[in-house]
Length: 391
Ligand code: RFL
Ligand code: PHB
Image (tube, rainbow, N blue to C red):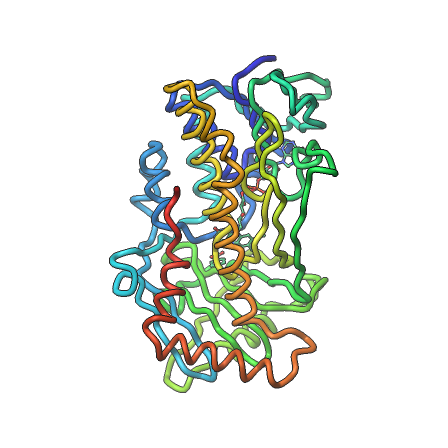
């Protein structure tokens, strides 16, 4: 099998890249190790930056998002039983975010790809990327029980944190920057209208809580839990009781309960692999970097990477200049590190480490009160949350 761009992974990064290349008349093949139902149902991100929304729309993948996505003009910070709203458009000159689940982004892109795009193979596991630093990189993969080879001009590893693409960068050329956190998120989906019309990020002495949503009738809620927690060990009533405690306010706000339809625990990690390119192998999305979900940045970063790659390849074809492709890693990493910084700040602002000294608690409250009191501090948060522009 032969193609121009071999794409490993059909998460948001791989699927959007295939669409962008298709729109530019560039051929690609997507290899995805899991089946379609699994990819379409994996519960993850919920927040799209304005730039992400614009890219999806321009790619012709925004029709349902424009109908069903919920525009949000702010978030609420909750701490010490107080509530503080951060007004995005007022602070950023008009920016907002959109609540539209990653599952739905993936469903829309898969449907488009199968209808109009190049091959998208499910149950096709990449085994290795070979000859990445030659003119003709290859992906060895297994599909329907048979081993095969995909010959490419370029390979883009969009295969997530656990993928194989990153391993093709020689150890001597790789640098990894990493931090793990001694807690995770217990996430639940519940069939109940969200108890607030915007997301609520809560700092509490018992730990962080987040109220989010998937639609006007489905809530998405998270609780900070100790690292290694088994989701099954939490009974539904205990989850609601704990959310009640951590989201409590001094006014008459109430959390509505409803049937829990899904429950899982996700670990928290900050991770960056440098460089994001080796020869003709390019890493994009979670394959190259991970952020803790507190800043809602992971999916948006993945979009930034593949937009950068697609534009650079189009530029090469139009002008013959590989300058932008050569700058791929540096261009992406500038944005990645800003998102790493913001996600780290939000995580340390709102979570309670198990061994945190009382000094840390006071500092967290002081940081939150500073955001609530200073337009400059609040603007810094609003700008980062709504997203930095693509270069
Ligand atoms: P993905 O989505 O992990 O997709 C990688 C795909 O590659 C496949 N794969 C392989 N295919 C072939 N051969 C192999 N050898 C392969 N190995 C792996 C996998 O099956 C998979 O289909 O990576 P991608 O595309 O880079 O997308 C990244 C995003 O999924 C991720 O950053 C976000 O979900 C992070 N995230 C959030 N991001 C946001 O922007 N906003 C949010 O609100 C947000 N909330 C979250 C999140 C992530 C969470 N979890 C579960 C980590 C909330 C949570 C709880
Ligand atoms: C979500 O709705 O899943 C979500 C929202 C905001 C975050 C993380 C996850 O920061």
